[in-house]
Image (cartoon, rainbow, N blue to C red; front, side, top):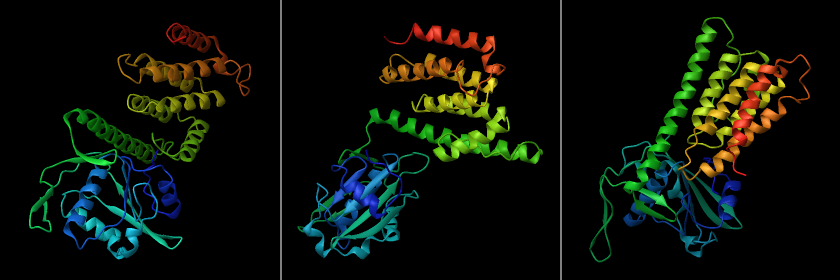
Length: 340
């Protein structure tokens, strides 16, 4: 699996060369000569197609289709692959801020160019705004792409967008919009709290933040008992479950923290959110077979841990009958529904 993370360093080059060949996120090219119009147009088409498949991808210049050094690259003019130059070539044919990031690498006396192409943050596709046309050696017109055409990387090829793909494309766009709005809303709420002079010193909680930052934020919020912020985060994470099955692990993590800090209110909300995610799974969808055991398993594990957590003393509120009864009901319902 290719991870499109924006890196163009030497380690990333080695990672891509060992990945096993071309795919939707990776294209190998032996050489390019931008003094030839056809090479420029082909590169622009490849770049825009890759940007149109979220989150983008990489082009490695100087290798054959198997990722091995190509002898054809020996006479390549490597100065033509400056990132600003590549970006200008792309933007001549689109009305969108697409950007190419490039870096040259010398390995065992062979030169490579690694180009990273990232999709737009909003997940929207980019059509060509101009005709990409040139003349071959026999004077015949060659059309590489047309104005208004939308192409997307599909495996090792560039293909026009089909009607059946729009649901997937718009789903990605919606997920990007929700993620952006969640970040802005959380920052806004934190700013309001800070202005009011109340608790505003804990870092924000945003779905998608890296693991180290998330752990730091959760610990700070639990220590200062910021239940409102934790409740908003639970709602935010649960809302992502429809598009991202991994969100269920986030809810399980919050529940585990609530156990550790004996925070019965947040513990209940995390458990309820887990159960609601399970109950909302659509059996007609292909991913239901994997979502149900994952979701149910998280709730069962947290529920069965509630009465035996090593940090919970006899007076901890999580050992009170109301909590035990609540979890018993959740678990009984799930035990009758989970496969096997």
